[in-house]
Amino acid sequence: MTAAARGGHGSTRPRGTLLRATCGELAPMARQAPFPTGVRRAHVAHRARVNAPRFENSVRAMTATGGDAVAMGWAATTGPDRDTARQLLETQLPRRWRHVQAVAAKAERISAAVPVDDRQVLVASAWLHDIGYSPDLVDTGFHPLDGGRWLRRAHHDDRVAALVAHHSCAWLEAEERGLDKVLTAEFAREDTPVTDALCFCDLTTGPDGQDFEVHARLAEIRSRYGAGHVVTRFIVRAEPEIVAAVQRTERRLAGTTRQPT
Ligand SMILES: [Fe+2]
Image 1 (cartoon, rainbow, N blue to C red):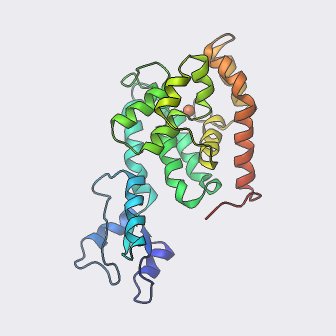
Image 2: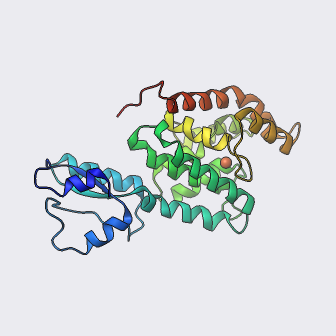
Image 3: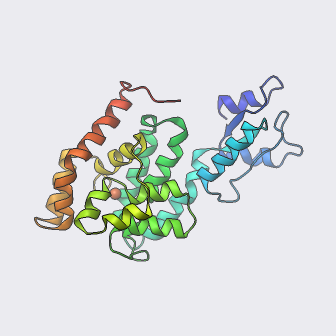
């Protein structure tokens, strides 16, 4: 159990505290009645497969009004996103599934590159960023847009849907495909450490999940699709933005840029 959660069970803890515990720690807590001392109200969400960011928002609202809350850990909250990606990719696109697993693992490893409150969103987006490749989801044939639309139809968190729709400079590929107005109209594009970190994870991870230096990864994409292909045209145009996003993330990880708390 985290230090915050351990401390939260004492009577001296100030009211309105957000406690954090893993799913395994929450299970026995949930069986207690009443809840542990000092925990006036608990959300035990690991059984409900809740939408993680929405759950976090409800926790924030509760603590802001002086209530206490127990928040489940990342492993529990990202489980449904991992399961969604697995169902859509593992059997039909096993190579893509290997890539996605490595991208999500990297997102967890480098999550210090984004503010604490954004880390869950980063990992969720990493799991879901390529679901638009699934034959079950193909609509326009442009995987970021198809993935974002599917997530929205599934009532997933809108920020995650938008991050998926715009991931790794997708707006530039949308221009190449004549879909830029559609993409922009349907999904707001954020420009934050999260977008940089998601791009970093995707563009330093190869199609089989292997690590790549970003320029080598871009060369791999150009070679795989071939000259003249829309993806190659996009990658050539996007290279400066992609490299800049990777370098910003590396600087944040190196601690040269302070993250807001
Ligand atoms: Fe990807």
